[in-house]
Amino acid sequence: MAREVKRLQAHIEAELSPAQLEELASRLVEKRCELAERVVDLEQQALIKNDCSLADAADVASLQDNRLRARGMIEQHQQIIKEIDGALGRLGSGSYGVSETTGEPIAYDRLMVIPWARTGTDDET
Image (cartoon, rainbow, N blue to C red; front, side):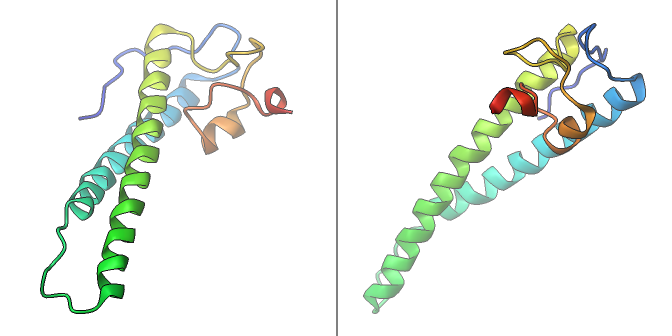
């Protein structure tokens, strides 16, 4: 279940309005729910057993490949969920919206694309 943030607070240096914070919080919660649902679906795919009646070795190999891909996607989704949980925590504590490396505000446009971003685009060059 998604973590709810009762009081939204950006870092004092962040250049985010209350309306922008609401939008970003909404995006975080929606993305977290979406990824959690995908994880459940992928976990079901990863648990599919080989059917002994499959006569074709290629079918068995394809099933195994699909399970490996599902497991990889589960790990990716779970990592993003952790990042989202961190962003929701920052929204609750008042440390959201600034780069963890430079302390500079993260652009709203960047946060709209990746609302769990911990750094600005200039940090990564």
